[in-house]
Image 1: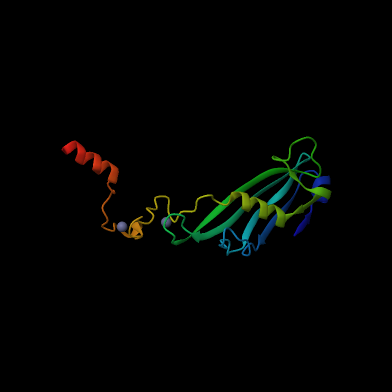
Image 2 (image 1 turned 135 degrees about the vertical axis):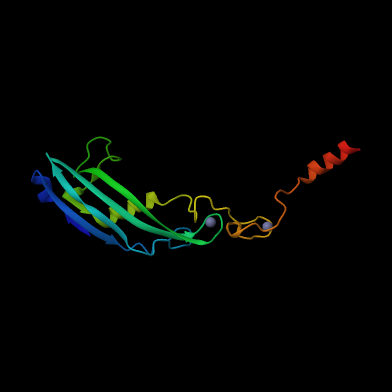
Length: 165
Ligand SMILES: [Zn+2]
Ligand SMILES: [Zn+2]
């Protein structure tokens, strides 16, 4: 959706509330489609003393197998978005200023790019996920598997034997 912000830009002390949701369920992250629920944006665009700014919260639910144990896990993430808007950028302000050519805000593009850059690099079912046993493959969150805690390095045992002789 494109929002025309012309009347916000030209009228001081005005605001426009924005509630939007974007379907990103077709977005593929390394073979999984983690954004099953629509991504929402809730907030407003303000003109305060000629400074036009967006202040909004984007929420999305990320659901994918845990990076450590492989069990499907869902987590809600929120992004606080507070940025000045400008129809043109002079110099190099493109990181801090949101460009709105023609005073038109493309909400799909905004939500999409904010979510893509916010997607967690590591997705765990819980912060202290114990993962899977490297020997038997048991999910260690469900309890210990009974494998010996640590494999003795065969080179070290050979050394220990030498020392014992
Ligand atoms: Zn896990
Ligand atoms: Zn094991």
